[in-house]
Length: 335
Image 1: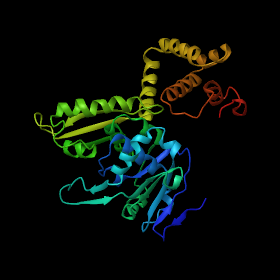
Image 2: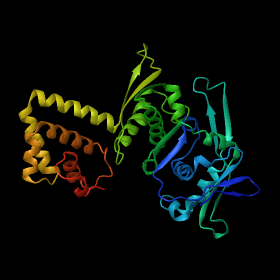
Image 3: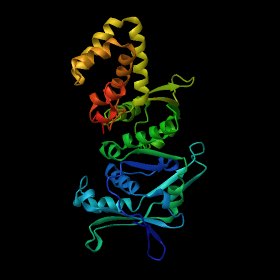
């Protein structure tokens, strides 16, 4: 369906596309500041989910319609009036983290938000045209993240930290440093709240660690430590992220080391995994365990499965047999 220009060239409609898996948000918006409640954040993610970034016109606002049955999955009609009224008054603040007090810009996000107007069955967002150039500035400077994951978070801090981590991982950075002042701003912690570092860790960072580690599909593990020379007055934190890929690579390395140190124990453990986790025939198990190359490849695939690196594979046993050239891929029933 073609995009539709409405209302005297003021708004470009982005027709609703169901079941979009990923959200894409320009990096400049990820590190911007908008004080959302958790419910407002979920509505905003629905808005982002329906943006066709390739067709944004920087001179016009956007019109996004979300069917009411989708909206009602996480917000009641009783809540919707207050939440949308509050969202319609929100501004997006863009700033330079290195000069937060010198350069910033406040941009109103929406010119209007309507709910079931004229009984049309939609929640309708009309974005401010001043926001369009920021949303259109994708290029390579965008953050990709999972739509369903972002809706399931309970904490707004988890939502913001998840996007921040996805920003860095998307640029192949698994280590990054923020000052505590910058981090409080990015996670939108209210001034005067959790000013003690131990409280900030306990009430913000630790709950976020737990929630990101419980993501369905591809959990994110991260650690942080104080950095710099100041021991009593810590000003910066360094974060280290372990993605599913990082974890699988680490576990593969550990496996290789274990085969050198205690190959007999490794064989016993692999046989247990072959029996417990998969539906191999006995002759297939014996072939895998007796051939070092096949055994190593099986271990690699098993580690990748454990870290959810092959989410589309339905029949893991057949997939492994095909990868080990023990059955033809045509007959493997792998989808």
